Image (cartoon, rainbow, N blue to C red; front, side, top):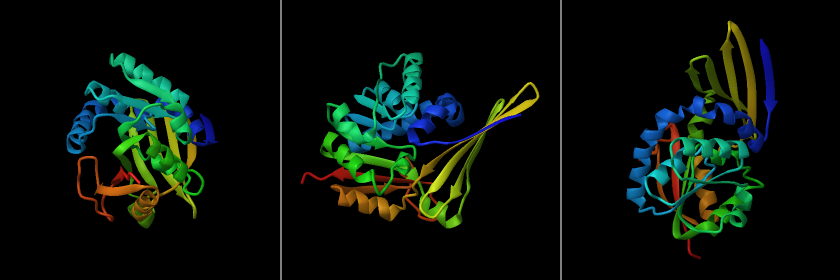
Length: 259
């Protein structure tokens, strides 16, 4: 049995898990399911260009490109960008990807967009004290007038209230992935325990990083303080109503003010 434990910052964390990310999140199954979901969003909000911030392994960028929507996928992790490019090549999609820190977004991206997707619980990697205002300013710089920011994160009102440690347990052939939290006063520690069985031997490693559990009221207040008008709130990407005690997800849409 071999073990490996590592506490990493956001970039290191995603560089490390890039090789298991698509297996853990079932990229192939989600591909067509999320294509249909994205199409609904394009129709509802009349979206014609997208920045996929924190794009990970490229699922949304690839699907939007397949739908004919100009899109740039951006991620802080160079290793995740490599996976995203590989996925696009496998699917024969001419998707555009860029490695960049969101704090330097406007220096790296020289175009504007109708919308920014900030999905996959990515907001929780952003330190509310030192990074969030700067990133929202960068988002405003690359959004067209009346452009929209779509944020998806887990419902931390529910998670913190119930102290839910286990996020998910996933089994893929010889691999098991257990995602869980450790709770601290100022933050959460997000952990992925990867267990691998080979030739009657078990190997495991624990990869961890820090998250900031934003509550619904906090996200809304921060958006308004940074030049966004609140448009809609949902409990899923399928436009289900948000229930603070039961919804798994929180989706908040803010529109860029022109002031």
